[in-house]
Amino acid sequence: MISEKNKPTLTVMFSTDTFITPFRKQLSDNFKVSWCPIPYTPPPKSVFEFLTFPFRLLSKKLKTFNYSRDSEILFVEFADETLALVSRIRKNKMIVTRLHRYELFKLPKADWSVIDIVIVVNNWMKKELELKVPSLKGKIMCIHNFVDVNFWNKPTGRKINNKLSIIGNIEKRKGHDKAIVAFSKLLKKRDNLQLSIIGKSKDQSFSDSLNVLVSDLGLNGNVFFNGYVDDLRKEYHETDVILSFSEHESTHLTLFEGLSCGAFPLSRNWEGVEEFLPKNNIFSTDSEFVTKIDKFYSNGLSSNSSEIESLASSILPKFSDPDPRKLLSNLIFEKYLNSK
Image (cartoon, rainbow, N blue to C red):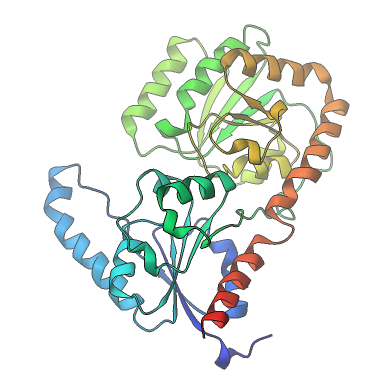
């Protein structure tokens, strides 16, 4: 264990701390850590946003400048415009960043030559990033996201509840509209099933369109919008099948939190999903989706429980053993020592 006074200083900069928070203790084992929120400043859409944008952008730059001043190592969670700014103003510091998904499709105009480590959360992203920025080859490391398999545990007595769930922010990329249409086709075979949609939307027009779609398809008695829930683990416990209909993801952790709780994960074939799930748990068309769900409910509880147990034992270690939190912290620490 490193003594507190000998620990190097590390500043974690983030626009949202959802994915990095579980890594907090492990980073603190090796570093004196400062946690510094940096606001995300997307291009303005409304007149008010347009008028206030220069002030928000200036505030963001000042925060980035101040937060990054006194640390030896800068960790930028999400490789976005904050990374671009840090790479220009702090070239003499060790810089680490982590890509999750959207950054890969629109990389920031960073000075990549001064970035010491780039962490991605799946190997497909690593290959794509090497193609986009060849100079990063050798600097890119894949460390999966973390799933707390002790917290996301199975209930003592699991049963079939005839419930499918899709969990996460409600946005077009997540494919809720496609899930509803596919589910309507599934109901022609199994009309006793329910689809639980958990999460909220920042896009009210898209949210309204989903409600209209449910009504137009006559699904009001089978599809339920549940918003945010206080006990997500309970929802996983009551879910038979946890779904992903996304166009693209880096991991879609709800699939594996659900699996850890004993739910069957089933995903659309977004790029990279085969790194985490076997073919039996991936679909490309609505008819494949219907066939796989119908087969699941035909198999019965005992057969499904055995399959889910086998899936969990082969898949969940990707997110827990070895512990990704320790891998990330030790990787940065070793790189720091080697640079001294």
